[in-house]
Length: 356
Ligand code: SAH
Image (cartoon, rainbow, N blue to C red; front, side, top):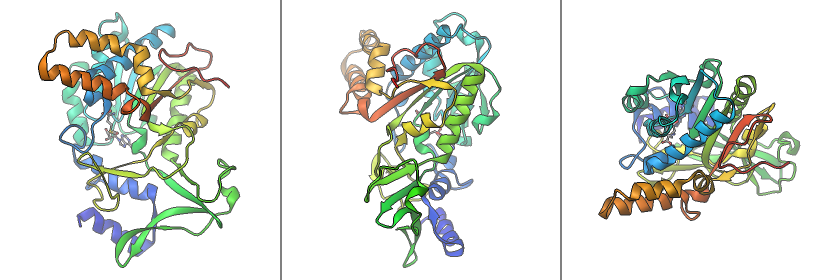
């Protein structure tokens, strides 16, 4: 039992069951005990490892995609280069290093990081000390400029609610108490037409919805529509899939999400269809597998160049990293990407075209 566990149990005792979004918000963002607020979750010694922490090639490829898109849109100057949830700052550092080679890009870029964790802000300021970044807690506070944005493993951390289609209608998955302990249950049924986004759902189906993810996608789309730019969103997810994807990760192992509130990473798969449905007045690519995207952007050529300077263990690690990022049996197909861009603009390189 930890402090946050007692806080949540007491809250439920006083005010009744909470939904998964409320539980995720408490576990991830509680001002004192929240997972992202108090600790350093990412990396080999943390609970999970992300693509930029596996290899510099991930950020370099996304950097090339951003730079090409910036050129395709007439190289706006000034513009904001934004990352949502930058973790340790590794992805942005790799993007900036790749972009350095391109005249004009860095001079026109103002770097803005959207981050809630003071601890991670501290790490980002060290990693990015040469680039004078700015921070905001939420995307609404960004300046109004052309926006070139990346978000890797950001949307999966946003609170979501889960609904089960039962014979009685839709029932939300809740957390209550059973014999004084946290336990899952279902709320009383809502009518079947309460969830008109899933008219074809059948009994036994489970769907998940994230209001914060939808609101952020809508905000990004408004900015791209008004000022131009692009958003590259990479995450593990699906296009409008169903099922229970709520999970907890602790020290690189899946764990019971109720066991260590605030001490394990809670996530859910990102529903890319719901993100694009929240946009208006812009275009989007098709959902593209991470492995395919990175291959098209030239990761294999880059891997070969980097390999030329390596031998022994570092070479083996490098080869394994390339495989891990791109192979369909590893992160290559589990992770998917989508690009949001202005209506009628050129499709950002590497992405599949969305055909209507
Ligand atoms: N993009 C990084 C880190 C992913 S972890 C990488 O690829 O390595 C998720 C990141 O999102 C962390 O930096 C976390 O602090 C941040 N975050 C989580 N919820 C957030 C929210 N609601 N608003 C802003 N940042 C958030």
